[in-house]
Length: 64
Image (cartoon, rainbow, N blue to C red; front, side, top):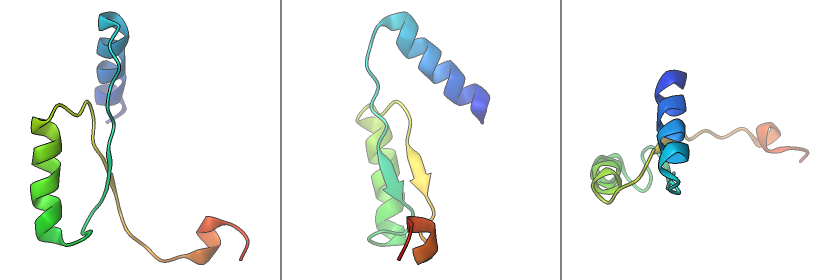
């Protein structure tokens, strides 16, 4: 996976362009929406798309 990221970043550097890296929480607002959102972001020209896994762990967010 790191090789793909490195390649995309290097292509941006070489071309002198700025990239767009949207973040999508998988399943938000629904799984069906996620399955529509990700291809739409790709079609719109996103350089990379970061997919996040939702979880509930208050300690992961810092002191409570």
